[in-house]
Length: 347
Image 1 (cartoon, rainbow, N blue to C red):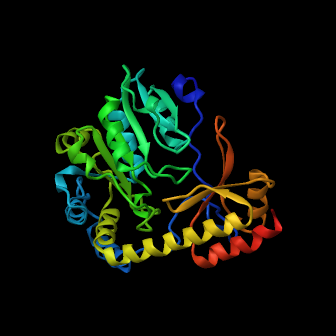
Image 2 (image 1 turned 45 degrees about the vertical axis):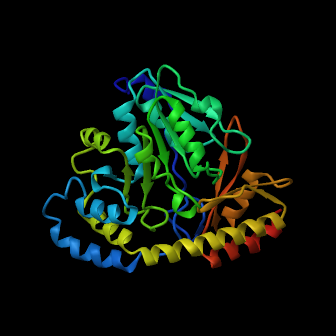
């Protein structure tokens, strides 16, 4: 163990949500899509199996062309990755030098801090405002800050900063601003237009949530073309495999499936929010595929355990400088009904 870098030995690794190997659970803990992906995905994967003896297209050209048409961007502005986490890693490696600072909102996605520490950088955490917006301190230009992550919608709160606020932040922060839109397909607005209007804005997205491909691992970013050219130097040679490229391309081309899936999840989210409030929970209005909630009398951790004992997994989260609560992913209506049938007995 003495060969391991001191920074690695001293840090806590990122802890993903629980993925139970045995037993039957209703999984509402890791923001997965509860519905199967587009039927076109299965057909594309079966067809792609014949191409497995050869290396994949290192730039995922078929996906970039399809996504460019859907998003109305230039395919040369798109870089693909093994999930959006891969892209966040590429961006950190490309922009942040050891000893520099990586700016983060707080509370937010805990992987950001891990990426900073892995790079030998300092996490520069700036609390969100009471309205869940990036603060003046977050938007301030500062020597040594070489990159900033802004999840929008945010996790764990599900809140979203309006595009004009993100634009103002980008214009003042003095470094690349990564707008992490992992959950944006469940929101009312996105920030893709800022890629063209602000030269330091990069938008990252994933197909894990709204396209029901969490098990596939595929994400992409949209950035100014000159930045994408440089970022290609940092990524692994073949960071997306043949099956994931084929499936992702088929998924993003099936926009009718996507729209119907989005509609169902947003409707269920609203129903869950209303029902939780009627049970005495405080629920933050969410524009993601999850809600954050707390109860005035029932502790979050005991409630998490009681639900788990009854076969329902939600995510218990505790932030040392904020508070603790439950993050509940949006499941099918049947799964949410099962959760809601249990909660009156526990609160």
